[in-house]
Amino acid sequence: MSGDASTYTIEATFCLQTLCTCLSTTIGQYVYSYYLQTYPIPPNSTVNFTTIRPFSLSRYNEQHAKCVEGDVTPEYDAQAWAQEKSADLFFWATLISSCPIIIMTYLLGLYTPQLGKRFVLVLPMLGALIQFAIWLAIIYFNLADYWWYIAAFINGFSGSSSVLSFILTLIVTDNTPESNLSSRFVRIGAMQTALAACGTFGIGYYIEWRGYTDLYWMGLGIEFLAILIVIFLFKSSSSSSVSERTPLLNSSANGEEFKELSTTTCSNFFQVCTVFRLNRRTQKKSTSLLLTLFSYIFYTLASAAFAPFLWFLLNEPFCWTAKNIGNYSALASISYAILSVLGMQALTNAGGSDAMICFISNLFFCASTLWLAFARHDWELYAGLLLSAFSGYQGSLSTSMMSKWLQPHERSNALTFVTEMNTIMTTFGTALFNWVYARTVVNFRSFTFFIGAGLCLIPCILNFCLFLVTRKMSDEDIPPPPLSETEIEPAPLRLPNNGPPHAGDATCIVIPSRSLTSSLRTPVLERSRNNSVHDDESEEVRSLITDDLVIL
Image (tube, rainbow, N blue to C red; front, side):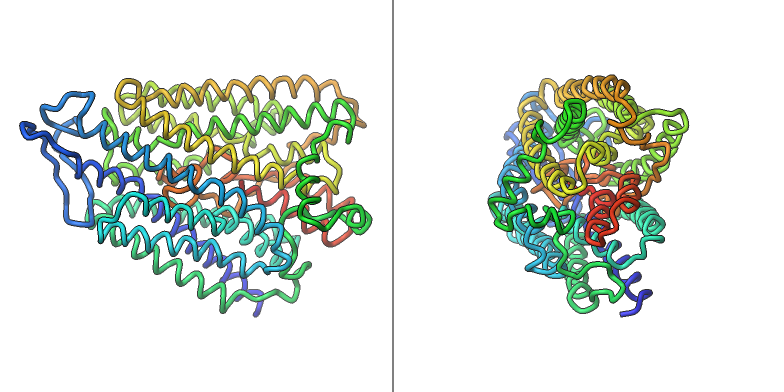
């Protein structure tokens, strides 16, 4: 296959998966609308709901400022009941899918050498296709709620979008000359941002017109088309620096290190779990590494506080429709892409270190979270985007920061460990905050935001300590300033996972995630530094993968 054909095929696959993600993130709105329609109205109630057509639930009573008009009490009205039921559904779906996601992410990455990249790439696409099919069956045949959990489990067992992102980025790396790699990722990132913005904007108006069912038929067809493209058009590039069966996780750095590493799964797992041991490096490096790691872990948990964000928008006093959500999502995607780049450039020019930039970013996270917690008007939600645009640098910089304190042969194990920790914390956090929201929505609907702001104070303090530690390091202990030479490029698949089963999905809005799963930009200084020091081809490619793709 020619280079041009390979380029077009890969970019077409990215576009199809971006559209599928935009379509699947509407499932939360459908679930909420369904529960609102099926609310058991008391015989003497005057509650009035408006739906468009069977199987295409769309909106309810938009003629008044309140979402619900009637004589039901606030404690037991349809609005609160639908919010509680929806949040509970997402809680159980996330909980049920968390174990297969965590296990399959590791196993599929570890056994990619045996399975091949194309086979592993088809698996999450097939899982998403089955999920769309089950959703449609639930809608048309009014199946029981446990079918949502089955769809979640199947999608999680296939690896979900995390494995999909990982493999696609590896394929881009394999099929792109190193001199063009940065510009290629920038182009793909810009293309995805534009497509996601247009998609979410159009989907909101389409739901107002036709409802939800057509969207899931579209998603089913797009996933099927993507599978056919991968099976019949994806081929190994003759210019690729590695074979199709290059492993994704837990690869050794060079021949000498490979001899020291056991090939057994248990040994690999042990090496991953012990990569952050204190006796492997100096005390200052170990301290810096652990501060960075725990800052990222608590930041990821704090980010999960936005899991119930969709229910927050659908609740009083906003009572947003699909059109409102689509407009907000599109603007959020565009503003985040532009303002975060400008903010990073400004902080870089000001001479800020990685730790200080993360510290400032955590402050913006706390501020944006509290701003949303107290918001009562639509304009306040839009104004909050100005704060949230600068709140995601912790996710973008964490892997690059940790790689500075690690030896080259430790970086792939560290990436595996961080990937698994991110998956665990995000799935746990999403389930937890959906559970909390379902039980506090009636009396304190902003409670999860206050928890998220409080949790983010922990990485804020840790990053300040890291700044003090690294400031006193000698030139031999610390690498050159990373951000002064850092080229910022988009991570290719900056999208939340599909549907209700997984972490970050409960927002059901395509807005930039604050977790490492969908970091918009990834510093590439470590890649260039590694390439200049290590000439081994496999290490060079693994360095590219580690720094260009931070998927979880």
